Image (cartoon, rainbow, N blue to C red; front, side):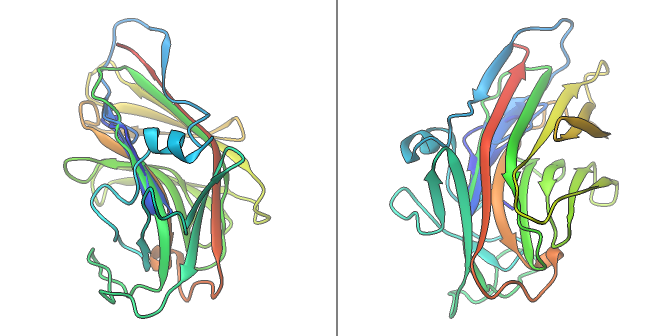
Length: 279
């Protein structure tokens, strides 16, 4: 699940083979280096990623990076690929980002370099961003998504730790069923997951996460919305001060089941906006 965004939220984001990641600072949330800290008073919001970041390839590349922050492989059967000169699996058009997964043969190496080392069956793109490490008391991350839900498809829009995992916040994660998973990983075993039904007709729907540093200057409250309705509230323990990558990606198989589709799979994203409150 990744596209690397150039932001460290002390949260992140950019995607390879269907992935973009960015890093946010302390309250770290999204692909641009960013960090969350509790603040004694409210400040006007600052736009970190504008809704126009998918308006052209040049604009896209000014906010997002290709592949996962750590490379091309992760925990599914898709290998991310892509660069400023290779857009075969990533399309930026009509202010929409399309991440495309296609079956592949004879990959080299044949298995993922990441645990649990699944066999590679697809080529995809991902992007991420890294948010700058500005102190902040909150981030709001939102966008519109047309997410495939067929068995073996694993699109995502998520925040993951820059330095060591966890923390992780999954704003959008679709694992081969008609549900979106809102997840917060405090440890590998202390996990909160809330499932919300998701249409299977590939229509666009909005999701949003509002992350707010708590008065103890340690924890982060995360409010998850779908189609502008609050669906659940979760808490990240000791998330303040930990940078995160914001990632948009299309993985395959793995947690979404197998075998995956025999044809092309497309995941579309538009109107992604990240704002920061605080200094």
